[in-house]
Length: 348
Ligand SMILES: NC(=O)C1=CN([C@@H]2O[C@H](COP(=O)(O)OP(=O)(O)OC[C@H]3O[C@@H](n4cnc5c(N)ncnc54)[C@H](OP(=O)(O)O)[C@@H]3O)[C@@H](O)[C@H]2O)C=CC1
Ligand SMILES: CC(=O)N[C@@H](CCC(=O)OP(=O)(O)O)C(=O)O
Image (cartoon, rainbow, N blue to C red; front, top):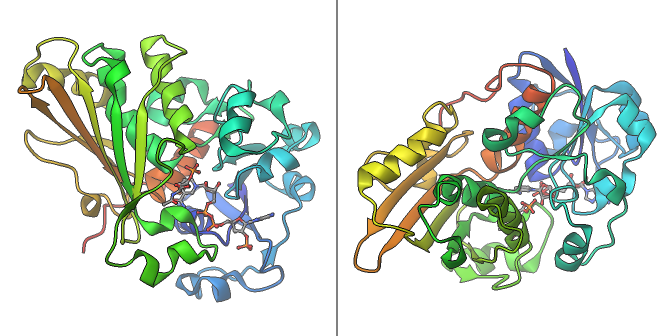
């Protein structure tokens, strides 16, 4: 049994980790970390766990936790994991960090976009960017830190990656329009996320400045061998609980047919359990992936403007956070990658 500790178990991503790990046959949660609910029963914070979880919440003492568990998930705000991690911890356990602390390889870009001083830059190089479908060979029993990609970035990169990698689109013309449900903003109380502020409305935010922009640029830059790739990423907040929908646009680099584009997507994803390339003219919808670890992808060639329109949908709390983190844990311990993750999407 893999012993698991979760720092940030009382957040939305943390609760989703708990839900998924309860159904995992090789993992046992032994530490429900919290800042605000220490000594309170976890099931009193999240009543969906009534009679399923007896444990009380513990503090975020990562040094102590590292001695007790095989893997720690940090589902905490940006900067916290980097401020806690040290060599002794990493000699005792593995870390899957759901925040962005180890995602960007250039610390100055992290500090510029996150407006935070990075407290552990010495671990950035060894951390593996845990986008499993692309980097699974780098995630092994020897890996100590996995930087779990974010929700917008997972959707955007998986949707665009084959097209960029195979040169079907001009990467300098990429525009990503993304939409997220409100759980993407976390459970913490913020006026902007109150019911009346979000319900019956939609808005763009972080326009031209959203911190996921350099993460997508870096990863798609690797795909086309460029370290200067720039693109436009515009997120929107929509009044639903879960889900990310990405619609991405780019100029075609050459004339292509539907069959040629489909063949490229199939080349990368036909064998991937969690990436579903949809049938011709079917557009992904968040409702068809909700509660699951699937990413649905569709596309349309737009001949009038010689562009390709690429679409992707996933559940921000599952493939966009906790599900991908469990997928990474499975890889770290040599388990079947799909263990604990094969629940079908729920509907309605
Ligand atoms: N929500 C999403 O869709 C996604 C989230 N992520 C990332 O996952 C991480 C968690 O996000 P999310 O669950 O939404 O956030 P929440 O705000 O819902 O939860 C944050 C968690 O971190 C804990 N926490 C906050 N501050 C501290 C601190 N100083 N020390 C210890 N624990 C602390 C909170 O504890 P308590 O409640 O007890 O105070 C809570 O458990 C973030 O880095 C986020 O960017 C990534 C992809 C998607
Ligand atoms: C709707 C909403 O507010 N979403 C969050 C991003 C989700 C997230 O969790 O961020 P990471 O992927 O960086 O971990 C935001 O835009 O800041």
